[in-house]
Image (cartoon, rainbow, N blue to C red; front, side, top):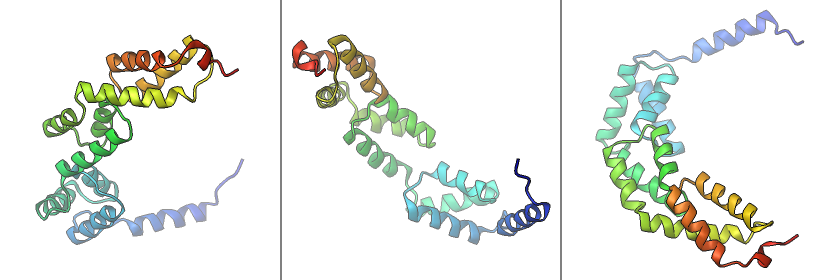
Length: 183
């Protein structure tokens, strides 16, 4: 078993302490927030969480995030709108989109309206059918196993139960038993 040298452990601890900013340094918190925003857009709660994780106080984090929101560098609603459109375009269903938004701290009444506007039942079913038809061409086996794999695939993509089963039934109608057996 590898034992770490106590001197190197102490050195690492000191380096870590030196990198910790003053928890109430608004200028350092703003610089860190701007650096985080250069990588990708972030929601206000995610940005505040990252700042707190970097050692800034809750007060400093909230102050900086509020100021960045005021000047338009942080816009949760715009972020949700663009992100939901991307997720829908990549074949994600409503339930997965909701879960991911909640995980990113972006779930709100406004986010629910945005998701609902992009994911009405008819459009979700149409996307599920298109995805099922594309996926079906790559599946091998007997009809029952292909149907099972297809429904699991669609469910993992976040489509509603009704959309999953209807899309799988619709896609399966396109293929005869013989075309599914590639063995």
